[in-house]
Length: 410
Image (cartoon, rainbow, N blue to C red):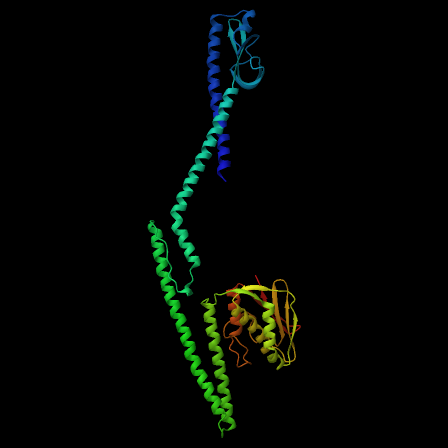
């Protein structure tokens, strides 16, 4: 895009330069002719009748005084009888003394042809420059694309590569040493990353299983022990506390495993999910839990939201928000679910947060009054929202004593 203005500016500049050169050459020609006229006048002084018949481009008239000390060049126009039109000329005016007489000399030279030559030459050079630039640009683009073809092939492979698919990354060969080195480095890096990912995934699954199994055994043994005869009240309370701790450990283990899977982006399958239908399902499922605290759902979510997301993650996100509203909500209050064109909001009435609201989505941040809470539910919600391209915001109204979580859709 810059080439055309530059070429036009160059053509204009070239035109004026050629024009100046032509003017200089014409001035030299006129000066030479003036010198010859002056010599002829000195050798053969004309009479008054012969002054007008010397030359078509020359005019000599008597002058009373030497009004011009030096020859003067001017640009003007004259009617050309041969061309039958007014033409631009370069004129030289001078006064020459011959004896006691003075003669005014006017020489002129049309330069229309020179101007046309300058214009055609400038336009031709500008067109040649643009054509040369276009050819060089075309050749450069072909060479550039050919040289960078392996690079774009590497980029295309990386865009489709997924570390969880356990498929080796095959990068194209290249004659360019730099691209060959790049392919080798990327291949080695992805192999190491895939190996570490596999080890981490295996460690997570094994650790979760190995922790969950003894916790389940302990829970079963405590249930059997609690049913034994002859237990004192103090022993029953100890067993009950141990069961609550085991359930909390089991829940924490499952939540940490889920967070690890989300961090590793193991939930890759996505599909259209209707959030309204999902909320219908969860409010029915959690209805008894809410009723146990004399709470009810108040819905005003007429807007339909169908988003592309992993269905399991969408279920966990909405479920955690609703369970959080029930768990922390005031007994006998309502849980309000509203929506608009871009958001879903879940509100519940409860006491103010016992910690800074900036820490709400951090891991292991929980209400000390709820011993069974793991402090991971909202951290999971935040992680799912970030991984799925959703927004999650929190607001508290001190006047209404209401907590509101808002999910914003893209």
